Length: 299
Image (tube, rainbow, N blue to C red; front, side, top):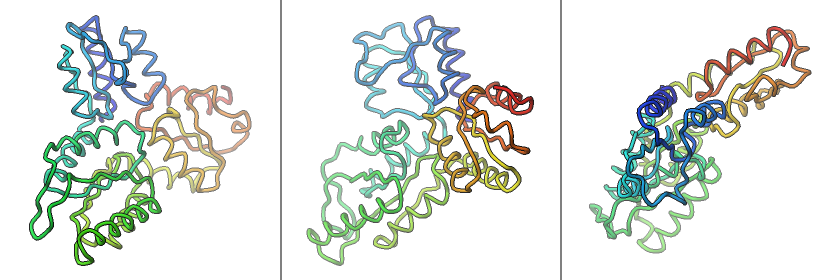
């Protein structure tokens, strides 16, 4: 839903405004990005924004951006088209809410992923330098810790606990919360939450995983039991596509990621039954082309 909404907003804006930009890639799919480029939409980088954006529309990608960058775009005169996925926007606002309440926030996901950097921006927009909590010593501004897996989460929790015990005493327990990248797998998220609750049993875990992501992953697991091999259709830069590939790899079945039909390995056409799954940002047209190539044995 979030991907389709972002693409629809972007295509409509290229029709309305002749000077349209996206801030970074709108979604992680090369075919859609090529079509946007053909429609005249150029990409901007957060590190090198034009000084004057008056008369221009800047589309915020589906993964969202941090509020500081959005404010800077407005200051430079840009008309903002917010294509942030509603589920991602909910995570951003939840992060700001936790930070405002003085929580230490654990973010489960890829540190360099646009969604995580955007959520970090919302958590860090609290300007107070000291947050006072009931029955707690005054704490410096909320801490945000990005963890990619259970081992990282455990190490981070131990480090935080040890630091707090040295500074405030062994009886001190910081308020903590966990927010996950919307495309993280349920198993990963539960493992990360379990690692943190071992030291912080009152950890508040926000249910931020996209339901469509979980359904897609569950469907792939069911599909893997009925096929000889599987093709994952989607962009290599897409986090949810890579997670589908990881699920397929874990099964031990032959699998491959294909951005186009040309990416299908020749030996895959020798299998009797092939499963086909696709990342959330993969256009239906791309899925159909790959499906037809598999059916008729050519790429």
